[in-house]
Amino acid sequence: MGEPMEPPFNTVTLIGVGLLGGSLGLALKQRDLAKTVRGVGRRQSSIDTALENGAIDEGFLALEEAVIGSDLVVICTPANAVPETLDAIRPLCSRDTVVTDVASTKFRICTHMRDAWANPYRFVGSHPMAGSEKHGPENADPDLYNSAVVFIEEENDHADDAYKKVMQLWIGVGAKVIAIDPEIHDQWVARTSHIPHITASALAQLIDNPEEALPFIGNGFRDATRIAEGRPEIWRDICLTNAEAIGAGLRGLITDLESIVRAVDSQDGKALEDFFDRGVQTRRSALDS
Amino acid sequence: MGEPMEPPFNTVTLIGVGLLGGSLGLALKQRDLAKTVRGVGRRQSSIDTALENGAIDEGFLALEEAVIGSDLVVICTPANAVPETLDAIRPLCSRDTVVTDVASTKFRICTHMRDAWANPYRFVGSHPMAGSEKHGPENADPDLYNSAVVFIEEENDHADDAYKKVMQLWIGVGAKVIAIDPEIHDQWVARTSHIPHITASALAQLIDNPEEALPFIGNGFRDATRIAEGRPEIWRDICLTNAEAIGAGLRGLITDLESIVRAVDSQDGKALEDFFDRGVQTRRSALDS
Image 1 (cartoon, rainbow over the protein chains, first blue to last red):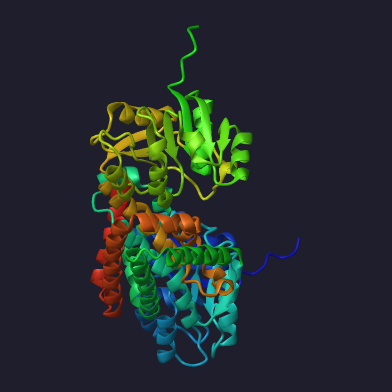
Image 2 (tube, one colour):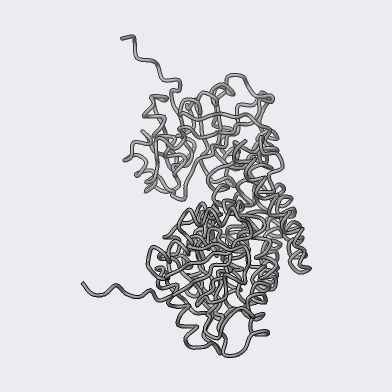
């Protein structure tokens, strides 16, 4: 047997110890990727849960103590809080500190960082496609990122070592890393995640009398609206931070639905069949490609 | 042991031997509900499959021979073909024949029958909430209707024996029968089934480059768009035969989505959070009530 390997990270600081932060802490500890994991929470109760789970070694309510001396900072707050968190930690980071995040929108966050930070950049935005309807540190799962896709922003004036370390973090916890332009990323997630979520919520709200509706509700309705049960404040933040792509995509969807209203009103069977046929073909090619 | 029970139906004629007709034939035979099951198909190959499966005892390409002498006729064609089928069989029915259907829209069909048939009515419209993405007689399943909800139109100038026999049919194959006004039925299925289907198809069509989209597609998108793979000609017919309720519901959905576009554009976090919160609450009460 050789010497035990030195962990690639010395001190990792997780800002936010909910499902995403807590799960990352557990994965870092179980895979021996960090000597020390620090966690910053807004409530002492979240910090206590994360400490009890073993997701973090040290808990903090304030950023200063937690960030100073850390070699990797992962911002695990809701998307809307990432820019202000970047502003708050900038003076606390050393020239060696690497910073990333886990927010599901990237363009505003990456642009905000570029406007305020020095080039070459030591922040590399990340978006792990991981999560669930559950939340909070009590649901943290060391395998949450295992086999998940993690999008990171394309290398573009980043410090070499910072870019490599963010790659190393996600590969270390078992994820598949895909580098992408933040604006293109946001346009895709608007169409594959954010707009479907908004639509699911609007569909659920067509049910104005739940008791009467119950016998009419089959698996189709259940599936089509399942994602509507996500946390409202998370989805509010996603809409606020990806407003352009969501607005553009939703306008396109509304135009399509208006054409269906016209086809229904005018009994245009050909237009309706073509529309449904395109839906079948697109879904098949999207899921089988 | 007593005498074997006499089957409640002598001769049942299924017009259409696809998934719904074939499954009904299998259920009638396996549960000893009919002495003879006749099947009418448009293609000899469908009739042959239904005969081989044991879904029908006798197969016909023409209505006349199949309907004359039958005590129960079940129209298992797509919704759009039901009115013309009703017109075609009216002269073939005796004063004892009972007629029903399985179409998922009811108002136009029931109104059409009332305009042409004599009171008390011997047609009672049915809509079994059963089906799958599969179709054709080769996928017929004797348990398709077992535990399913079947909506039948409220008793309203129907012949007593006709109404009772249609109830007996569905209860006999294991379904749970709910009587409802056809117009109210159509408004509910528009909201719980037809509009979700249209929306799923429109969402799938937001993916204009399937290869690039693939890593962005998670379980949320899969679930939200699953029903988009239904058969285009079935859904065309549903839209054509439930145009008023679908049009009204879709207009309401578009209005809701337009309000979200405005909230996103104006960064109105309160409106967005309230919207998502209503979605969570409505879905929970609809599925748990």
